[in-house]
Figure 1: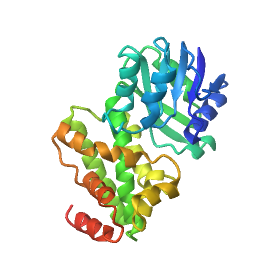
Figure 2: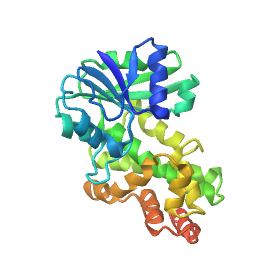
Figure 3: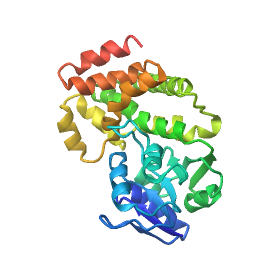
Figure 4: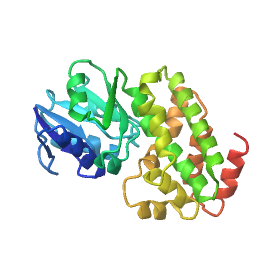
Amino acid sequence: MKIIILGHGKWGQAMGSLLSKNKKDWSYWQRDTEIEGDSILVNCLPTQVIRDVFQKYGKNLKNSIIVNGAKGIESKTHKLPYEIIRDVLGEEVDYFTLIGPGFSQEIINQMPTLVNIGYFKVKNSELVKDLFQTDYFRVRLVNQIEALELSGAFKNIYAIACGIADGLGFESNTKTKLIIVAIEELYRISKSLSLVINEDMIAGTVGDLILTCSSEQSRNFSFGRLLAKEKVQQALSIVGETTEGYHTIESLPFYEQKAKVNLSLAHFVYDAIKKDDPTNIKELFTSFVENV
């Protein structure tokens, strides 16, 4: 089967570097052309464009293998990447999701990294694992998709919170407190939705959250830092790349209602973005962090 990477950005480049390391033949999808069927498709497109691209250019993909690398929630439908793909291609599509704490440039630089690949059907799981696993990029297979993709989406919201704290001058103790609260909320919503996060999934859930919440390499963290001084649209413009947490926050009320939980840290980020007032963000943050 041909291997095609959808998306030429940094994440697509990182996935390509792993395939090349394993001596696999692959190519980038050429925008505005039909996506070839009977292929292994590595999706590195932003979540908000997945549906449009697959509907327009993915007419004959029933026999393809989809390996998702996107993180986020579709704003209009509140759906995760696997739900979007199933809407377009049907529930029988052979779908995998690759999620974990891995910055693109560090993967390209061959820094030791540990991620999860989640699957619905065990068939082809070892094949997909072997495409990406190297001596420095290690993969743990887990029979779970939804918990990984939900975690991969919500960690971007929590990274914005940590970035706001950093931009306001709060230091390591405070940001660690936020990470602890974020992990608690991640477990709370997962439990309420009957999703189990077990020890084999730590990389793609807690690990990914910790990395994204603690580094300026994270676009969401950087966006949060900017919110301490800039209005939302200016901050997005300065970041200059897709900031998934900004889109994901639109789905917070939906998931709080669906899971019947209160996610106070995530809701702080929701309020900060909706109020869009950097002059009052310190007061808003202090009020939250002193009472959680």
